[in-house]
Image (cartoon, rainbow, N blue to C red):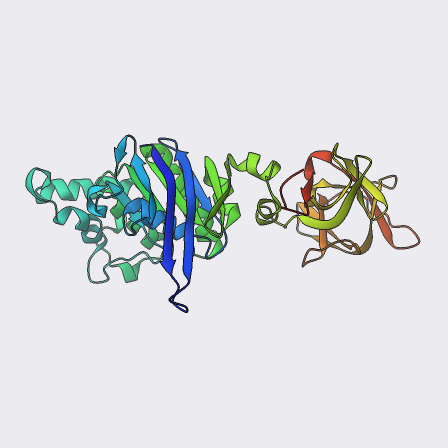
Length: 362
């Protein structure tokens, strides 16, 4: 099912100042293709969950419309939208078995939609098999691991065969290993069912690893939408560049003079624009140790993480809140000069330049 948001806006009255209006979602205008998994990504408080609540009907928009395919669902109640919702805290009934939790959404169906007990149990078993928990049907939630409980919640959302599946921070309560396993399960389930899915997270690695498209938000405003690698490789502004990537991108004060991009007195690229001060952002994987390289940093230490080596350095023009990190191959040769400087050759496509006026890409 295709989801179209047209100029969607949601405003609240501030809890602290009744005269202040807080805009949680600001003029969202985009289309989510049918059958895709979308990662809705941004820092805490950026409006991700509010957007999800608007789509499922738990919140009413201040302005704008919501369409599922060509049907305007803006004024439809949640139960009539054909949406499955999975929350961060699982929201399972502790006194019910796994089977009873999964079946629960079917219990309240009426009229022609009402099912007999055998049909409901069959649907529950099919949903359980999809998330690979069919052997746990008679257990109670407190007898399950966090990952198993989350899969029960997903099965419960799927049992009504929704046209849209909404996942609100579904992995936040899981440890690192379970997060990895569960996100792979989510991707497999989405591929098998073909349900249009929106996956809300503040973890950019999660979003980039399983999404067909990602949407990056900040302060209620859509910053960029596209395929994960495209957004990572071609950020439209400094916020997107800084938000995506682990380790984070390295940001420097720089300037452009006669089409050459400088950090300090060293040339790190070219841009055919007028002379101006800029931010220069360099991905950790852009640095290649090279004694003839044009860019130099003060060497601090080397951290080895197995497959890769992280060279930690400093530079007086770096404005990041953390040390500069260069990710290089574990067999890279690291050479410093008599002033403890290490020189790098930079990969051009990993060096991004942003205006100091509006922080948009140059």
